[in-house]
Image 1 (tube, one colour):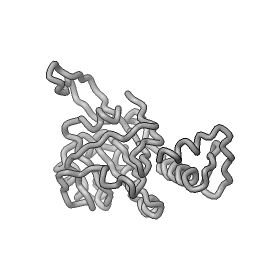
Image 2 (cartoon, one colour; image 1 turned 135 degrees about the vertical axis):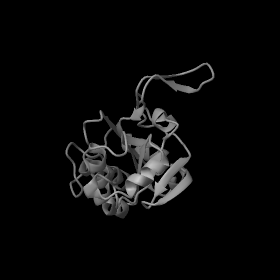
Image 3 (cartoon, one colour; image 1 turned 45 degrees about the vertical axis):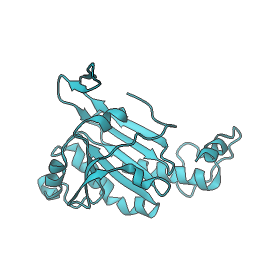
Amino acid sequence: MSVLVGKKAPSFKAAAVVNGIEIVKDFSLDQYLGKNHVLFFFYPKDFTFVCPSELHAFQARLSDFEARGVKVVACSTDTEESHWGWLQMPKNHGGIEGVKYPIVADTTKTISEAFGVLAGEYEYDMEGKLTASGPMTAYRGLFLIDKSGTVVHQIVNINPLGRNVEEALRMVDALQFVEENGEVCPANWHKGDEGMKDTFKGVAEYLSKH
């Protein structure tokens, strides 16, 4: 498992379902470069238990992310057809009907592998192809990516542990505060709190690169 913080987010093109119904064949995060921050998160599988609670939770706060100029994008190793079918199923039947942000289909497992969240027993053969001895799904990885395409925050959970959407939104606020004010955010900082002067010049160095 790799740490991507401070590095460019891996680029990819893959099928995705957008707006809850439309299948796009060559979806890429590159479309947001220079324009938006991106919250890109992985979940293990469609038609499961913890996963829909997370997808609905992000949808419930989607307007708050969008008000901050942040694009929310989800991804799992299921197919785009599986995503589409799950999106047509009502919430009270275990579905994710009503989720509008894009859901990427990482059917080749290469996106999950590139982001360091691919779970399962696998290796690359002599030709560089990914081979597996069992099922491969993504851990619950979450990546906050700035406008330059650099990963600035990541967390990875094992599958039974659902994430906190409020914390994800807090990290967005913290990043944008740093970018706008050139100050740092202490422990438990929330939007509206005061920042701190950065005597080590870490913020200046970050801003000069982004």
